Amino acid sequence: MTGMRKVVFFLLAITLITGCNERGDQKKGTVPPVVEALPVEAVLIAANIVTEVVVKPDPDGDPWEVEKVSGYQGEALVSNIFDRIYDGTLTVFDYHSGEPLSPDDVKEIEAEFSNDRTLIGKLSFTEDWYYDPVAHHLHKRTRSVTFGYELYNNLGKVYAYRAAFRADLN
Image (spheres, rainbow, N blue to C red):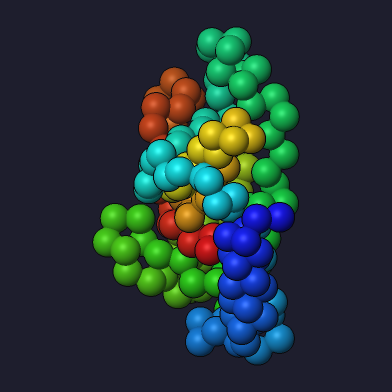
C-alpha cells in the first residue's frame, strides 16, 4: 500500500470511529449509516444529478420501459421509509418547499391516496456520481429519494405523478 493510501485509510478509520457518536438528528440507540469509502482516485463527474425511475410502467406501453424495471423489488425501501417516519427516526421534507413534514403531514398525504403505497409509481433519486479511472468503475452516492404517487386521467391511465415527499438517505 502506498503511503498516501495508508494516510487516507487511517483518516477514514478515525472518521468512522469518531463519527459513530450519536448525531443530533438521530434517536438514541440508532446506528448511523455506513458509507463505503470512495477510492482516492475517484473523480466527481456529476453532483446532485436527478435520476427518475418509473417503477410501475404501463404494461400496454413500451415493452422496454417494463423490461428496464423487471427486477424492481422496492417494497422494502418504501415500507422502511414510512415505518421510520412514523416511529420518529426519519424526518422527510416537502418536495417543493423543502420544509420538514411531520408524521401527521405524511399520514394526510397517504390518505389522499387511500393509504395505498402500491400507487407509488415513480422514484426520483438525487445522486452524486464518481468515476474511478483506475478500476474503471462508477460509484453512486444517493443523497435522497422522492416518492411519486400515480395520478390517473378519466380513462384510468397514469398521466402524471405527485411528489409525496423527499427522504434524505445520508
